[in-house]
Image (cartoon, rainbow, N blue to C red; front, side, top):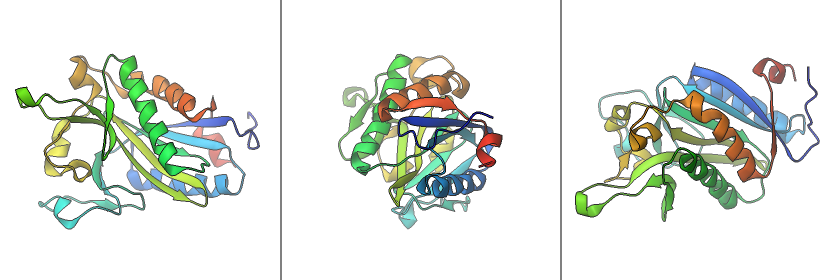
Length: 230
């Protein structure tokens, strides 16, 4: 088993958890890794996965933003509001030591913007909104469209949660909610913007590279089994 460079401030362990991962399972693993990172027993680590379908509500979620049809929602300890995760969406949970949460959030957005550009999609920030967006065209009645979302928690100087980038997910999952509490905008994906199917498996290695660059880290692969032996 490869030693984990726990004392290397430039290392970023990449742990791929696979597809159809239950949200509560990944959340529990995040908390475990967070504790190990705080204790200095693990380096900065990112969990990469696709979730089984789930709606999650951050601390700022208002009652009227929840589904009105009784669809279950998992209340979580991140910032932000209501969103969806599921098949066709790349989710990354960087568990890293930081000093500036605003700068860190911008770095996650930078990573997603770069990934979008790698696939020929122009994405940008929009003032007052988290995440990354494809620009709309008011003259054509086309709204801004969210491509990626960010939701974070910072505890004892180490982050949890992270970002979700829409690759080839079914947009109808967002019809039951107001994504991230922002009305009058749309949701899109790399596939929808390019007109060709771009799956998470294709995006994942590029996202890992861009995230490591944005954080100024050197990535290395770490199998889940090796992680859990720590």
